[in-house]
Image (spheres, rainbow, N blue to C red):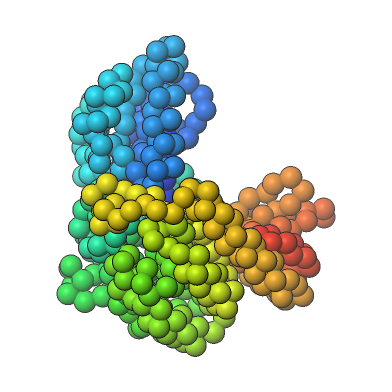
Length: 432
């Protein structure tokens, strides 16, 4: 009989870029360990891939580490390893405070993690991952790090300078994913639109997207985290003309007030931001825009926040997320007075999201009676749950289709007529 392999549970916190790192780790460990991801069952080894982006994410990471340490003390696991952004930035402090952890590793220390588990790093597996997403979609991380100096952001301090993955490597990885049945690629990076400058001395995101779209089996390509300053307009031509490229763009704007944008070191003022949005929408009619904004940035007045509310009310983003400002050590904004009280930050977040819920509900109601192509993600209760090209998994709207008289296949596309709408959900039925 085969000897039972020791069990490793990799716990991923934070963003989809962390998820890709965990998938790479899982692939390297596979066959020498029984690998699990975000599993509640007891494991011999727990590896926590931490997030260190903002205060709440840091606290979640610390709480998860402490929970794993308690499991080790009670005998429910034998070893606890910590990696990721929090460990990269605060390794010494974490070692001093939580000495029950068996190893702390940074974001680029995969070979060292494997060595601590008596596993050799396999170069032949570069580009391969053990997917944790449903088999029909996957994230494709096209670069690492960031050259921006946004005043509030610690990511460059954690992840380092921008490093693009060569196009040929990304094409190979995407082909491997397509061969496994992946139909939707979600392109991610700290700064998607900066892609290629370090390798090719010019922005090559448009060329990359076109080459990815040429891969057989890939049906949708979706783009996340497009930095607004220096946005490459040639990308809009690709989005408009290539049927495989979703008319969807995640472009974090953070604010609209010119004074705050300047303090944030975002590279665009109010006029530049408005001009960019108008350019995107005029170039790609019907495109869905997702953005994120920060409330409670140092010095933000009520009138400046009201300007943000008015801007969002006017522009009517399809999707929107909000962060409360969190001071991060060693960033430019950390030296500014964090003078917006926490209760005011919370109130502003609530007011902004109340406005967005109203906008989202109105935009969804406009879809009633229209037909859309929908990718089915799963079955849940009495519904098949899917998404249109205007929705990314986990963060955006879903389409719920009743399943009384038929079966839909997860990972397949269907045309659906929208019959009902709520703030963040659509309801539909199969259409001819």
